[in-house]
Amino acid sequence: MSGSTQAALQAVIEHPLFLIGVTLAAYQTGLALYERSRLAIFHPIIVSVPIILVVLWALGFDYPTYYEAVLPLTILLGPTTVALAVPLYLNLRRIRQFLKPVVVTLVLGGLFATLSTFLIGWLMGAEPMILMTMAPKSLTTPIAMLVAEEIGGVVALAAVFVMITAVLGALLGPWLLRLFHITHPAAWGIAMGIVAHAVGTSRAMEEGEEAGAFAALGMSMMGLGSAVLLPLGVTLWTLWF
Amino acid sequence: MLLRGLTWLIVFQLLGTGLNVLVLPFVPGPIIGMLLLLMCLIVRGGVSDSLDKAASGLLRYLPLLLVPPAAGVMLYGEELAAGWAAILVTMLLSFVLTLPFCGWLMQRLIRSQQRAGDDQ
Image (cartoon, rainbow over all chains, first blue to last red; front, side, top):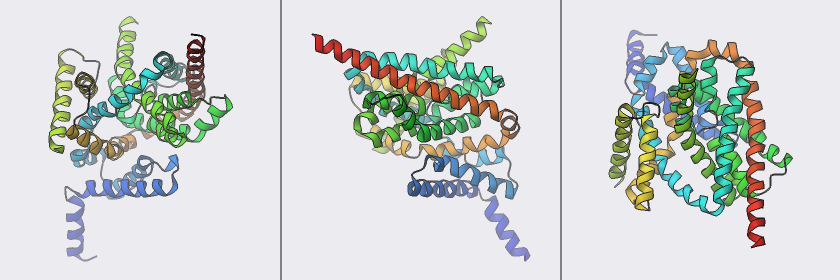
């Protein structure tokens, strides 16, 4: 390769927009694959992360350099998390129809989801860091990341665990609910929303309008409740013992 | 119009960050911001056009914004390699137990509410 081509390549790779470009391209590859296949396993995040990791590895970038370069994107994550209040508010109106069933299911189901993860993970001998990262696996990703970080887990792994939950929800969810004769659309939807967050919700929307609305409600309230109660619970637990 | 909504979202995020340091160290700043915005919406009884535009605009790209933090998984290869069996079993078991439990509970409660409604 001639010296000038080398210099040009170097200039492209070192341009401040290069890694943002890589991220956008990888994401759109994932999005195209997902829209064509409609398979949860091809979720844009699941497809784009490996592509980005390969590019970073091939060009010799480390993660802190990458993170710094794409800060113009990730800086928006905070306001976007705040923006979740808008769909949450719209979903909240749905509660009135089945107030008591929804509240009881959210409280008991949410506790069950979190405590079963702690208990099974502890029995399986998972490290405390892994346990704290798995605990918010049923939450929507931005909330799961914040909660994991707050209670001593790891942001990046939280995203991976949320994605694994999403794939489980899409692959096994409808089959499990049929197996247990759960046919009421509100029950079908809220279970998918509480346990399998956004992917469960989009799957429930395919099932029908009522199932979709209750899934969105389940996801929002599970995220909201856990965001406040999980860090509080862990703080109290560590103070106690 | 969109800018006004975006400004509000940033104001609430900053309020959340301030309150996180002042009084609620265990709840993340953006979550406090989300709660405050939710309370405002409940009090106002509606979502303004500019806020709706900004919120749905940002939320459309939420998965993209999550890619860079998720790429941080490259730092934790060792932890994953050491604990993958425990992780997969925990995630699968907890999922298989929780999903039917939530559905069953909700369905039961709805049926008993409907039965109570029929009796009256």
